[in-house]
Length: 258
Image (tube, rainbow, N blue to C red; front, top):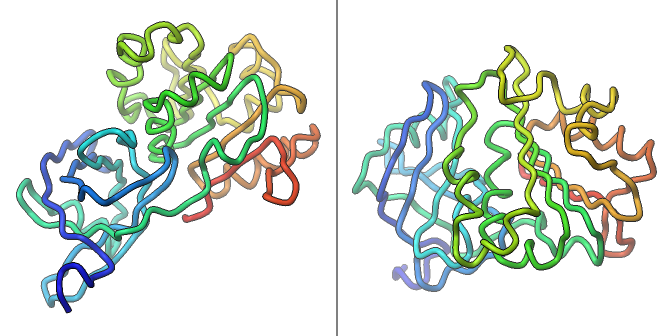
């Protein structure tokens, strides 16, 4: 099979950053033919010592206009894929499927005024891609980025988030973004304390945002821990915020590749 016939391309690792013992980011070259919508994911493959490959899905952190691909990963103890991935070094090869996947994109919503991006852990990744794409700033009047972690040291990509308003193409829209970090296992002066579901139930999240979640104006994206997604969806459904489907547009979109 020739390189052009393979279902994947072979990319080179450009950078690896260790954030904590269990979190790291990696950046690779990007095939010129690889296209994606902000919020989508790629299937990444690593080659094991025996020559076989193992594949997993990872949302792009990078924007569709970037000439590289960036990903955000957790190390799963004993995990077949992340154990191999975390050993890669600059210059090593990473396989990337030729096609992007996923429906956690702005296409899920036909209207809406306020966009809420609710994430836990590495579920932040697709929202960073969305926030670096100009479309979201044009479409919504207010954007709320909610990022929940266990400990404050796990709050990744803080310079990127803080610097969004300094980008020339986003400068006039910078005031639309409200960033709400959450830390669950310790108190931190710059973050709310508690889980997303707890702060939704007691109203603290909306008070901090200065805006309520309502079917008419709110559009919500969820990405992260499967239990968080399930529990949050139930809370939102009780408030008449429904999953958005192709046959029935709604207010909630989720990522389901976990």
